[in-house]
Each structure stands twice: as C-alpha cells, then as structure tokens.
Figure 1: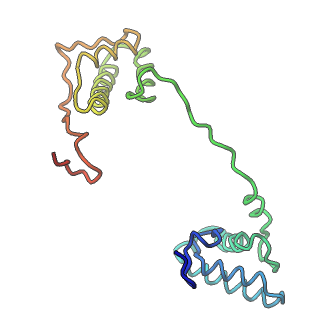
Figure 2 (figure 1 turned 30 degrees about the vertical axis):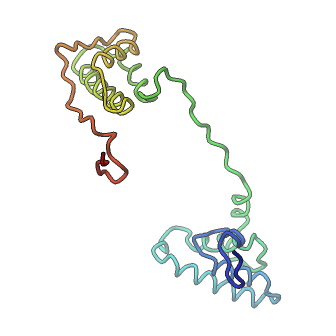
Figure 3 (figure 1 turned 135 degrees about the vertical axis):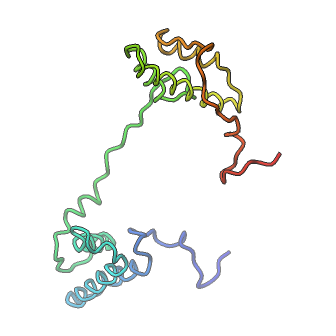
Length: 202
C-alpha cells in the first residue's frame, strides 16, 4: 500500500546515530547545505545545544562536548564545513575503521549438554589432591551434572549415569559411591514452565 504523504522508517534513509532521532538528522542535513559558512556555524552550534539537552544526565561525563561535536560530524558524513572546537579527524578514522573480528571459541567436547565449563571442572578434579575441597567440588559437580541430564532428558535422570560419566571424564580418578552419596533434591519441573515462569497447561 502506497499512500501519498505517508512513509515508513523502512523507506527512509538509515540514520547514522539513531539515538538522536530523525529530526536532529534532518537538521544536520539542512545545516550541511547552508551556503553561508557563518550561518552554518550558528546552525551547527544550535544543533549541538539541542543534542546536549537531549541527554542532560551525561553532561558530567569526561569529554562530553567533544563527543557531541564528533557525533555532529558523523551525522553529516564529515561533509559539514564549519570551524569545529575540537579535532574530529580521530572520529573520522574510528568511523572508517572496521573492528577486528572476534574469534568464536569452537571446542569439541564429548557430550555437549554438560558444556565447556563442566569439562574444565573434570580436568581440575583429575589433578586435585583428595580432601574436603575436592569432596565439595565433586558434590557440586555431580549435582550440576544431574541438573543438566534432567534438563536435556525432559525430567528423567539416572544417578548411575552421573556416576559413570563423572568417572569416565575424570579418567577414573573420581568414583562416586552411590550408596553413601546424597544428591540434592532437584525438582523435575524446570522444563514445564513457559517464558513467564508459569506452568504450562496440559
């Protein structure tokens, strides 16, 4: 549907800095095209005053004024010919420089539902000396493994599976005695709630 005089943001030019809105962007575009430099200067200073009033809570931040003038230059695509009170060349370089891509850690683990952190704990348990500290970490680890199994198995979990996996992934160092080990009481209803935390109706 195309109604004359009615347009949508998807049909408009993308905003350089959306936080200032389209009205401020239109002001900047108008300022760029003012032929007289003195008049452009007054217009630019007026726009920066408006920008400053939009975020009064940030006025105490360090280099706040420099940031506003940098943003003005960015919104004009650095085409605004005025006497800037600060050097905006650095802002131009930052704007034109692409950040280095962040490498995503891709570790292969035998069983994904335990997660990378759990396998780091398994490695730590292999090298710990027997004692209360290791016993406490074993207790925490076994209970977390049970929670993971319960979550990924839709509520079903086998204590023997936990003991078997714990021994397997610690190279036999940790042997869980199910006759004496007490798991925490874990409710098997974590998978039966929706996004609002309410139980789903059956």
